[in-house]
Length: 366
Image (cartoon, rainbow, N blue to C red; front, side):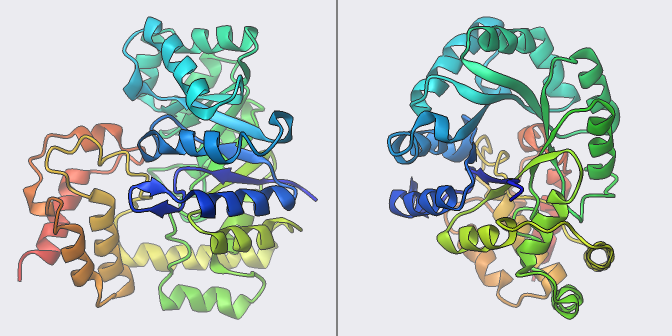
């Protein structure tokens, strides 16, 4: 078995505002029993509850050497070199472990990289590795191939790179999935893949796209095509799936336990699906929710973008209803004041302010 399936802990099962520990325990047990063992978290995921859920559900129930745990150094939580050390110790404490197998410089792009350089974050990470608190140091990345090449050239000590990579973003001019992957191959860095299902977007396909995959009939689900596409590339270490229920876990295990690489016909089929999706428009949001924490108007940006896409791409008659649900206690798209904090933290570099105007035009002007 080629073990390429990683458990991304950014979209855990929730009971209201809290992680559903009962469901999470079942997912962990099923995942581990199937021969997989890679868990990925970050300090800001679920407002810190991802780390503590790992501490409470994974760490006390499995020996430390039976699983691989990745955490990340996120720029929002430090402004100087001195602040990194206590932050790291807090991450160890919150997850309940004594070391991380992988520690990634989080969401690196040109702007964040400048901050990390100024604070000597890469040097601190190497210190932590020397001290045995980190086994491997890497980066997660959201920018152009030129920026990635620059970072890997300046820091050859980086051991692994986490990229957004899926069949829709493969040839995307903004995400540059293929070009970034090629930079990793050039520098001989193994690749961790995030957003293989594009925040669920490659499951909730329009009927025309579903028909392409249904006619092919080689995949076990729409998600399985997306997962297997990402895992079919040489040098891919893990493909992370952010699952929020047992059903999604079962589906991914079914696809990845006896992994079979993509055939040429499957590559052709997902290209057709990509062409269909591109022709429908829509906002390429992955619902990572980095944008929501600091919004002064408490606009639930990813949910409103999802409503917009449902209406534009899938002609979903229910999208107006859900727009009302998501703006009942949170801000409407039209209430955006254009402060730009959301655009500064968006890994996709979306023009969120402009997109919110499109959303307001679609849902608020009757």
